[in-house]
Length: 211
Length: 211
DNA sequence: ATTCTTTTAGACCAGTCTGGTCAACTTTTA
DNA sequence: TAAAAGTTGACCAGACTGGTCTAAAAGAAT
Image (cartoon, rainbow over all chains, first blue to last red; front, side):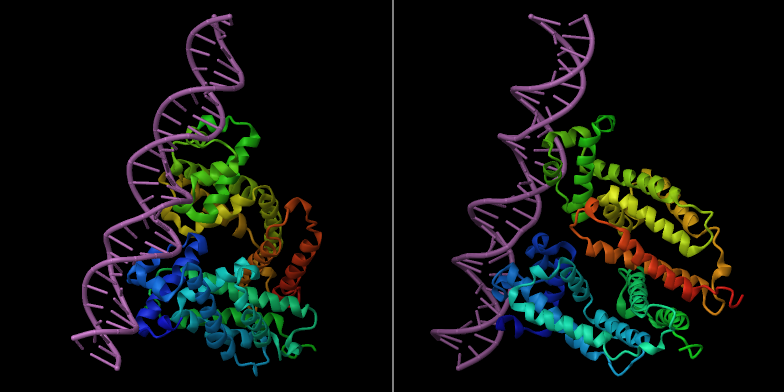
């Protein structure tokens, strides 16, 4: 939709954020275009001037958040880092930055992934597959498995590390719910987070004691 | 509501499940009483014969799921088990059994907790506080901290264990979404789950090497 | 058999909200 | 100044809302 693309940045993001929020809160069917235009502070007609209908808007959002995920998250992960925990730590930092910029995109992406691949429009499936592959390679490839102590299953330890990071992220999200992001000093949170990661290193890596 | 209490077990659970499902899917405002009666396969009038209005039904559900959580989950946890991981393992098994019996209660409880204490009706706040205290004591009291290796922070390790269990639970929930619970053989899943817990033990406990 | 009470169903209510349209108005462009 | 592009919100038919009420069915009591 050229009409929409060429909008002032402000209005564009206002509409996008309103739509992302509405859809991630209520899902496609229950999301209300009236709520969206109200939140975005535009006339009702405009939404349907920019987008043919509700569905097209929804698909646009999916496309948009795929792009964000790829460009602002996955591609920024440095895959030279062979230490899994350091790699994930890095990824978490990047994700956080992206979340600060597009908070609703993050939630929306969550609901999209939750509902499963089937309901992604056919047009976007190739991009989605690329995203998945990219995600896999950016997170799991070129990892140095030898860091792990040899009396635990590496793939399970992997998973545990991920759950730890997810867990912390969720905890943070809950704790900071409703707060204004720009007013928060994140340093103590990062410190706490790194503390958890240190424990994982101490516990899961061998540190030259064996292997 | 005596009217409702004295119903045949079948009809009662049909209504409860329908309501739990609807409310946990859509939240209070967006939940439709029409959907509920349709799902429960009763006439519209009956719902308002049993419950004064939508809100009273909702409150009844909250009360009900508090009871379930206390009786079918918390009170069944054996607090003689001083090993945290074993205690949590046990708790997870119990929770799973409760979930199998009341799948929608579990989700409903999640949404209730998510929305925060404020919106719990005043009448139920004392019960909710008891629930919280009971939960805390049943999960965290009488734990043997000396099992942990002494080069990691115990409280953080604690948290990591919880996140691991949550993570596995979520993974399972996602994997088994839509499947018929009674037809699933859970043994391999439990085995996998215990595998994760073993790693946590190996990694977080000292096993007489120190302390 | 008759009356009285309790259950049940779903048509119905007024009102809200739905996605989407459209004529009228303003602003930008040429 | 006129054509084009952008913008608004009143408006549409129809779906759905929480809740009511009548009338029938079922049960209990006499």
